[in-house]
Image (tube, helix red, strand yellow):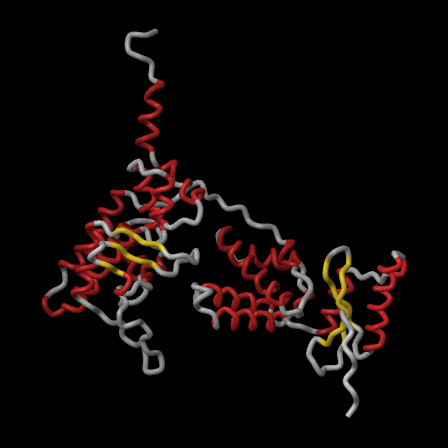
Length: 380
């Protein structure tokens, strides 16, 4: 058995034992690499020549490489985008405590894989990615989320030395109009509750289970409007997070990676007590798909998407997402004259700038402030 070659700084095999050698070096301050196939001696000579040139100050003696060289090497190595997508997906799914959203990222990665998985990662051009994003037919904010996930795929590859380029970085970010915030109007809430209550009233004695589910929906709405919790925060609540004595909800691990305490107003206390008195369990969909809901879950009947949009349609309310109930919570605080700092604390915003989006909702205070500009009666 031959002796293992001595290590040379800057020379490595992408996969140990493969016999394919690379030289890693910096060009203009940017880390890059060059492939030398099975010719290790050539890779060593290349790196040594570069070091000699740097020591002597002879720039002409320093080997040069371009982005095109790096792309050519990666094309020769044949790393498919499918490999990068699979790696990032496994990375996300194996760390649920770090990546809270275990639904949307896998869906986006799968859509990227379906479109470009067969392509070599280094072969994709920015315009191809841009054209694909536009062809999705989604809103600008959603396009930006797909762009971010696409970039994360390449970033994962770069961190693991599988690729050196990221064509997504040259794709233009879509401009998103955040000036208009959708929130539930009082008249819309009246219609929404009227629909929910009519369904409850229509239940007879033989439909006791259905009636409980309908009451559960009203409680879900009350808690959302009374706490401003994010959807994931609300539906991941455990009874151990609810303190009736102190009248607070303790969120131990939020989107921002911090804990926060939410005071419970009377409406929320009442809803929580109703939920506590009528525990429901989620039915398994099939024998091989059991119910994974924790036994002490506060909201145990499943996702609200189906009943929510059906109720909105019946109440003739358009373009309202469940997340807009969080906007409603913040907007109503602003309209009542609450300070931006209070809104930030109540909603768990990371910065006060996030809360500042709701300052324009305080129309009453604005009108009162502008009233001083009125001309006094009897003046010209």
